[in-house]
Amino acid sequence: MAGIVNDLTSSFEIVRRLCGDKWKFLIICYLFNGAKRYGELQYHLDSIKPKVLTENLKELEDLGIIQRTSYEGNTLHVEYCLTHLGDTLQPIFQELIMWGLNYSQERRKQSQT
Image (cartoon, rainbow, N blue to C red; front, side, top):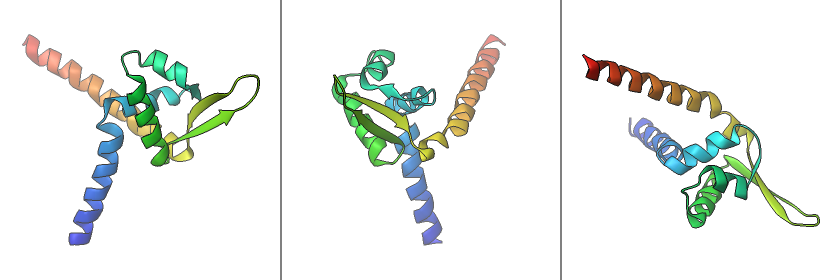
């Protein structure tokens, strides 16, 4: 029984780290549409501080959810994309978003009655 509890606790911690943080959730959602440069992510997440974005990207990379690729040329630039593991989150995140929309609609209906 202790093994099951430990597995659940460990699994929950991983999910909490990915979904319980506003910025990680949004970063992952933006990357579902393809690779993005740092500046593109910062533009779409306009209220995020650069340090916070960098920390979140690093943690997602450490978790194996995103991959950072550097391109050299006339100017060096970096792109972030989802790994295969990150791609597997898409249907889960879509379900969470749909649940949130349905929940909001139900709450509005309840408040109108």
